[in-house]
Image (cartoon, rainbow, N blue to C red; front, side):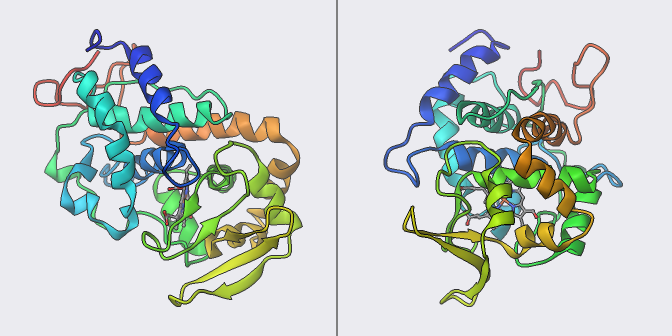
Length: 286
Ligand code: CCH
């Protein structure tokens, strides 16, 4: 147990659980990043519903969404941290998990503030279908991300997180990693997207993706149809080119846009205190 509000103690414990030799590429990092993103990425500006407040993935309505398949691994990895620092809300823990993982995997430092609530407000529950479908194209990505208030450059920038982790046939139906060093945060996703000869492939399960066989790594790398849409769309593409050649710019922009992502639906006063969380039922708030 730590002092309530001691987020640095929580950060340390998250960092020390990332090394998971028996899991995927040996790190819990990528799936923690996906948990932070899917917690937040259900937000809809117009109706002010969804977002990380409420940690809705604990319940079947949101946790059982096929788009969230596999994220129970991330939640299980974080459970010992919650058991030790009982004062932290799941909503804070799941967003902080992604932030710490990115930094520990060599990515930028990202601003993060606590205070999210675990109180589930039924009127704020997101319907299913709020998260993007990798089988689709540019119109779909815009529809999903504009709803959260992101612009075209921000969409491209956020997509750079696909330099981390992999697709699992038993979770999304897609298969493989985007880069051959998927536990290191970098701009490799953009560089490979531009420079490799991606070929369409239909997997045995009927799912369509794009692949390139990397002879050095002796591994087949992949891109989703939505990833390839960033290349073919004239408004997205210049940003792919910029981030491929300017790693510093990618890191700086990513830090800003990911911190915006985890703040979706969180209202704060000037001192940074959350004003739309139920303090009595929602656990501790600093
Ligand atoms: Fe993603 N992502 N993502 N993604 N994603 C998948 C895996 C990861 C889409 C689809 C998929 C973002 C945007 C999109 C991560 C971070 C981000 C998978 C494989 C699919 C499918 C899931 C599986 O099988 O396990 C689509 C579509 C979009 C947008 O159009 C954004 C934004 C982020 C974060 C900023 C990370 C990390 C992973 C790897 C997870 C793992 O378990 O290794």
